[in-house]
Amino acid sequence: MAGKIVVISGFSGAGKGTVIRRLMQENDGYALSVSMTTRQPRKGETDGVQYHFVTNEAFEDLIGKDGFLEHAGYVDNYYGTPRAFVEENLAAGRDVLLEIEVQGAMQIREKFPDAIMVFVAPPSAEELKKRLFGRDTESAEKAMKRLRRAAVEVESIPEYPYLVMNTDVDACAQSLHSIISGAWTPRNPDSAHVGGEIITEASEKEAFAADFAAQLKDLLGD
Image (tube, rainbow, N blue to C red; front, side, top):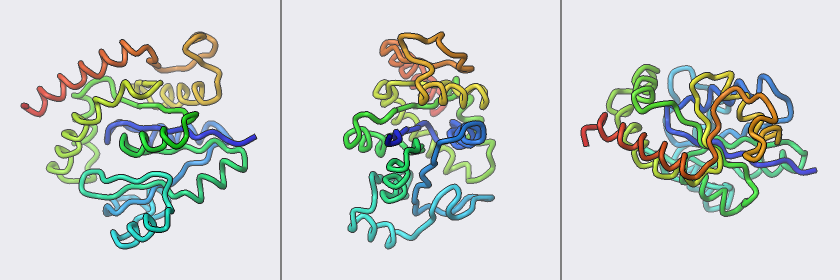
């Protein structure tokens, strides 16, 4: 049986990478697609682990060869999902995790309607700002640019079937696994212990997005 594509999106600073690492530590059968990017590595990052770091020329060459499942520009850089790795692991029956931003996620949804789509968010905009400015991997100017980008991305939250709160790494990872494995469904939300909050009702996702957008507006002084 072929594996499933799992799209995990969220604001920069939401903790997606940390949650995904915990998910893979605690569960077998997942393959993490390492995205390609033209941005510079942050302190502690290794080529081929967090990202494949390449030049603009190399990235654009692969675009021309149809080597990406999706690609997009984000905060002055390219990001994309290499096609070969995903297709090989799906064929081998592994569920492939794609940690990608909103633009790329919508491309994947169009190509793979059965993909599991999850948006991971912190509980508040203030918490997001705290995480962005507290991780000490980039300038305050860049962190502010990412916060402004979040003000755009928040509008896409209702497009995702699942909104998962990242207030605790273990709980959030457990929630993701429950969704992917089918142990938790909107119709049977108590069918498995999921650890963290999962929101699937359209009205609740819209309300969360509207409230988060208002918080960001206050923080940014817009």
